[in-house]
Amino acid sequence: MTDQNIVNQTQKFVRKKLEGEGSGHDWWHIVRVVNNAKTIAKKEGGDLFVIELAALLHDIADWKFHDGDSSIGANITRQWLTKKAVDPSVIDEVAYIVEHISFKGGTNSMPMRTIEGKIVQDADRLDAVGAIGIARAFAYGGAAGRQIYNPDIKPKQYQSFESFKNTITENHTINHFYKKLLLLKDNMNTKTAKQLAKHRHQFMKAYLQEFYKEWDGHQ
Image 1 (cartoon, one colour):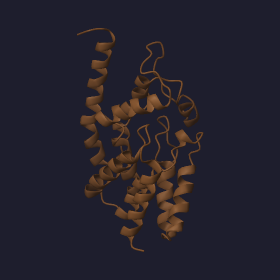
Image 2: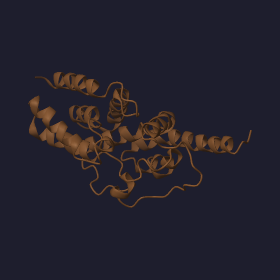
Image 3: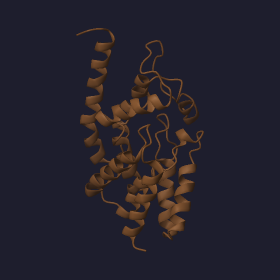
Image 4: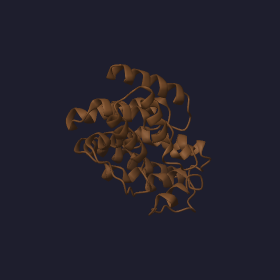
């Protein structure tokens, strides 16, 4: 089986799994991450086969929907790629990316070790900032039962993954900007992604300024 055939079959597998999902982690999120990754790879290099597979599979089983289990996505990835007789070294690399891609409350004790991992992580982070990032934040907030905003709950930073994931449903969506979205620009791995993130970051800051004005009844 050729690399392209494996990619094509993986696309069908992921689309069937995620199409119609309503929290912002759907098939079209995957499509955008793949496109972001290809854009970054044009300037940063890397193995496109690994990059595309990891981008396709990175949200196949997100920990947020599996009781905080951060290894389930990598396990499903290994099972799928083994079934397709992918080279073990490629499986190892893709599974590593899938397991360690997630933003973990401002900390990540296992940073991406390859350019492929850095590119896919940046591609995913780019889809969490800017206009699309705002839309996804509120889509996820609704799915998780969050309030849009509660001025009595102030934003704070989290020093561990455990403390970060334990606030998934108890926080409000505007706080999510401060504990994650506004931190992503400075947590990009590649020069290309850092540049792409600048405008999206400024758009989010402008959005928050407008949000607070409208919240307070200002014209």
